[in-house]
Amino acid sequence: MDLKILDLLLALLPALLVGLIAFYFFNLHTKNEESRRRFLLHRENQKQALPLRLQAYERMALLLERISPGNILLRVAPISDDKDDYETLLSQTIEQEFEHNITQQIYISDECWNIIRTAKNTTITLIRKTKNTDEVTNAEDLRKVILTKLVDNTSPSDAALEYLKKELNDIF
Image: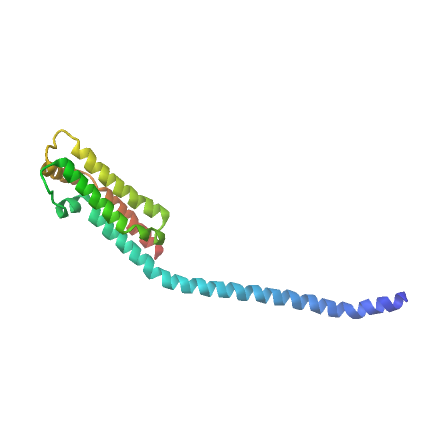
């Protein structure tokens, strides 16, 4: 009886070995196919997402140009001689520009978005601090003093734009 069981086990051993090897290779093939499908799907998604990301970077560059102190002061003229009214108008215009482009943050890195948001906030702070200086008495003075400060210093928008360009170059 023991001999029959031993003979049976010896007869089944090659079949069991072939079955295990077949299972291993089938499992390996299945994993490779799944990885290949994921890679192809990822590559296809990248093809579709790249134009959207590029468009977001373009819009962020436009936003930074539009909220740059030099450009916004030239584009938005004072509606009265009151410096407080002009500061409010400039701040609201910057906030509106920012809100108009807020959805683009999903296409750019968090770090880049934070730098853009910081540039916006720094520009508003620059305008508010300049308004409160002794040399500013009306809206026209506010414009002149801010533009004079920009001659000596880099604007927050310019610094953010440099980072935006660097990040875009890293994509390619």
